[in-house]
Length: 206
Image: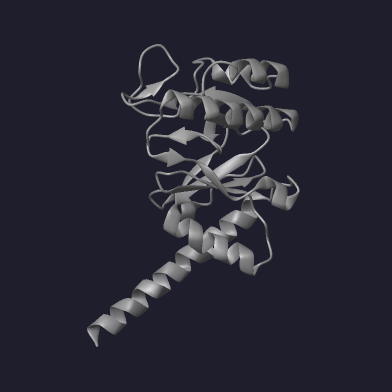
């Protein structure tokens, strides 16, 4: 994506508005590095990977008031990061598992905020404090963001696109579901994937 100055300016305004809105709701917002043609900018020097918090002491800045958040986004199009393990946690999965889990949640009538990144990762937002059950922790690509971690939220820019909501927090009235509900859906999605793969294998052998 061509992150020209005009694009960056437009996104800075939108990012600032979203960051202030989340801060007013008590979400621990942090400014993150943002993409350029040469890498991720915002810290001293360019970073090869991102987004990451601009401030290296970011954990000490959690709980910043909305007026300070507004100041952070007054000059640069920082990514919108939220610290996890305080107000919310997030379970990160690949897009295919994310779609399957979303289907399970929809079938159960459960609404869960879900964000997606251009790199093909889905983030299921939950309440904070639960551990990732063993069967999920054993799977490559499933990551629990809890204490001492952070996640990017829309509309954070990436090298090849922008993070977006699959399900906005407003849809569930900003009420975060329990982690167990999401983990149940992920477990069901994993099992259904195993069954589907086995069925395809049987069909191929006939």
